[in-house]
Image: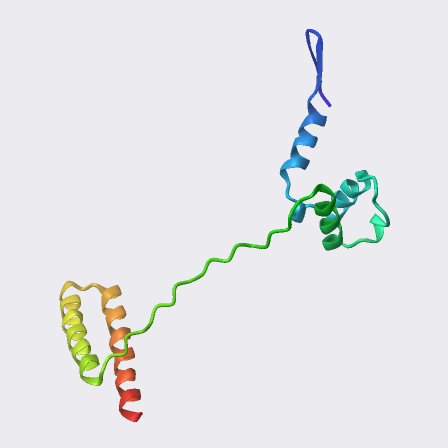
Length: 132
């Protein structure tokens, strides 16, 4: 504990730092001991030691008037897949094979592997299309 005397003011730094940290920390991140200490400060606290963490958080939020907001969910856009016909798929395969030859010439290994997998995937699609 550091006590500093600045003229008329005497500041106790350590206690101010602790109070500041307690305010910044969210209730969900606090330990059960810390939550119990906060709950004991509330005047109408009953059976605080028997409460679990979720109950303590709910009790403290209710006492402080904090509305419990759930996590915000981001809605993903559903992109409709465009189904190609068998001939369109085969045309795409030919185009990718040409790109693969160009990648071979430039010795770009990543591009070659990517195109090989993509061509393989499209070939599987044509076989499924033919079986259906």
